[in-house]
Image 1 (cartoon, chains in turn orange, cyan, yellow, purple):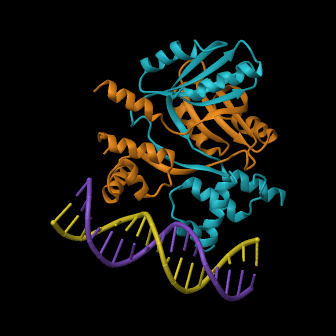
Image 2: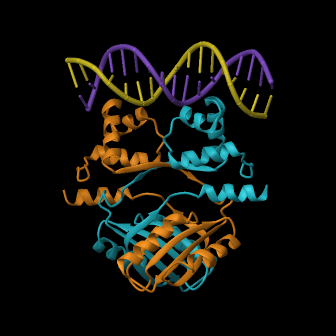
Image 3: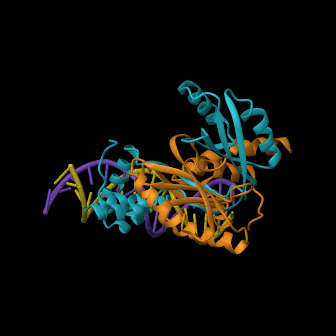
Length: 166
Length: 166
DNA sequence: GCTGAAATCGCCTAACG
DNA sequence: CGTTAGGCGATTTCAGC
């Protein structure tokens, strides 16, 4: 399932569906150059094997009223696996935290947070994040503007790499 | 267009399509409690007004061979708008850079990058990023693991907020 | 203005070669 | 993988609230 190798048609399918996740199967089939039924079978296989984790509408968060976006660098005073995992579990519970990545180096985690306004974020920061177990330091940076925010993966890099090794 | 106010059904539509962007219109209509035609009209309106920017398959980047994910903090030696914009334009050209956010505070930008392996990233770092105009400092942090990576917006926070002000 | 019902059209998705 | 074919969803039209 997981280690299934992908052929060029599979990669094209992934690329197309990453660019437009609501494309109809017949349109997708036309673009990748096969007929609809095998195309649909490939899509199902890609879904079941985990290459496709889901499909999401890309909603304009600012338009919806989330005017604040913040990156938070979090350091813990313990790097025991149990404590790291516990912190990650808390992050999964907090709606304002959209991403939590464990990092190497001096800081332990980077969090991407959203909030309707600054005071909502400040409340989260002081009442939740800073009070969480083993949190030793938090440095926050407000996002002024987004220059680029592309979901997904650069398929051009992937194809270059495959052509190079061929 | 942009300032159009959303009613509870619109918000439910956005929430459902964020969770499953490939849901059929009839299923969506059932979930939000109206019939299919008005539901489809609402979706089209949400698309045209910019609340929905697009739909994307969420592909597993590691499974696809992008084993390296890096956050890069970039400082420029000029904060003139022309230089900031020029750097942002470069970021949009670099496939490995998936996100580029301008920040407040000591660092100017945070970049989220992906790469097939470390050497590909190092090459990008030394040959592209560090050589870009006005780049003064770059600090990179490798992502060890992702604890949470939720695309989109927390609709529960939005609903809480609306109920509170009602 | 909105919604919903009916009808058409096109797509999805089996089954088979 | 392609073709066929039946059923279901998408989308327009039109009537009603």
